[in-house]
Amino acid sequence: MPEAVDPMASVGYLIAAGAATVVGIGGYALLLWRWIREARVRRARLQAPAAPGPAPVGPQPRAEASRLS
Amino acid sequence: MLTSAGARRALVWIAAIASAVSAAMIVFYVPNDRVQGVVQRIFYFHLALAWVAYLAFFLVLVASVVYLVSRDLRWDAFARASAELGVLFTTLVLIVGSLWGKPIWNTWWTWDPRLTTTLVLWFIYVAYLMLRAYTPDVERGARFGAILGIVGFVDVPIVHFSVQWWRSLHPDPVFARSDPQLPTPMIVTLLVTIAAMTLVFCALLTYRTMLERMRDDNRALEDDEVGERVYA
Image (cartoon, rainbow over the protein chains, first blue to last red):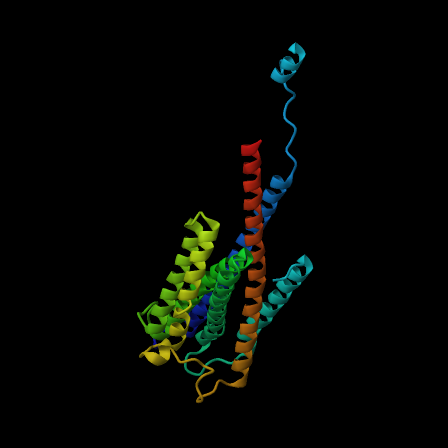
């Protein structure tokens, strides 16, 4: 161990290493939670029945054809 | 993997409690190393992170072999999840190792065999993730990924034995050497930290695999929707 490194600096390195581990794993866990939430929302949207569109306006071609015949 | 939400949540709580116990042991229980002093405490989570990275890549290997045999995409989802976590833990090994190397070796990085082979390992599995992300055909991506997942694992024993095969700054494996042995409090702390990190990995892997399957299901639903629109 180089003599220039004092015990306080050693504590600093230890805290930095611990913080890197916690931030790395915790940050990934948060990302994962967000991705899962997004995937659930997407699934709900895909599984939802299609919303009814606006009522047709004007004469309908098939109806016209059947009335003429 | 765990299928019930309750079991998954229980695993998260157990992993969190084990991590808290391990952190408390590293800070309050384990004695200082006589030579390195307080900074040697980095050793406990550095080694645990490395163990979990090896485990993750081993699971990629197993899932890749099973996928190639069975062609079941659930194994591919498991391999993808495990590879991503392996890359995360290898990244942390490199960062934490660098923070330990600076006060002990007086350098952030050196082209030592252990460090270099670990960096190569990181590149191999980053390449795996890129391959998976940029191959649009699911079956083809799974096949290529499985082959890379098997071939890539060759680097893991090279990383592990590099300190014995070549002259290295990095210390030998602590459990392999006969003398001097670690004192009991250090061994206990190390084992608890390894167990805690493995539980954290299992919890993350469970949720990451679940996410992969949800994404696959969503993709299938989207394809069905597009198909219905085309044939309507």
